[in-house]
Amino acid sequence: MTRSLRAVLLEDLEITIAGQLLEDDDSDAEDSDEGLFRDAIASYRYLTRSTVFKAAHWTPGRIFRSDPMRARRDLRMSRGTFIFLLGRIQHDVVFARAPTKQEQAPVQLQLEVFLFALQSLSTHRVAQHFGIAEGSVYKFRDRVTCAILALEKEFVR
Figure 1 (tube, rainbow, N blue to C red):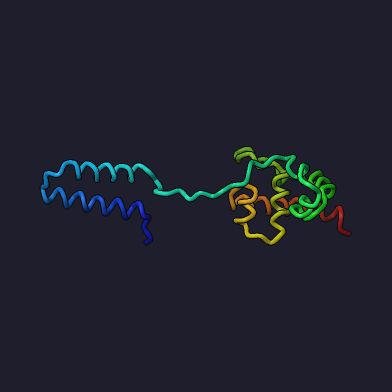
Figure 2: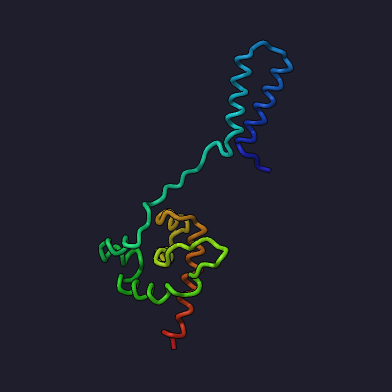
């Protein structure tokens, strides 16, 4: 079983402290330093936290403030088509909040993430672009797909 660096360091420190206690050395300063070091390691769940750099906070108007070419590149469609599609899917039952669940992200964000992910980028890259978790990319994709498929009978004959 793979052990964390934290667990290995704690075990090594405990062995070192136990060995020094058995030697019955009068180096109290050295013992207290190692004891403090052990306490510091034990008090944190992770020695180092991985930092994921997130994009700036998403705002609903972001896509409308960008130039039309950038919007088309990110959304894979014109802004007018995006607004039309957003209007058609935003009241779909898949976006309704279940009573015991957390509130969902805005439908516009979910649609933007879905369309941006169509560029065949990695889930990690899409998540990093929008400042969301990778699991959210999967959830948003599934919800938007269900909502679009619900429109199939209206538009496909």
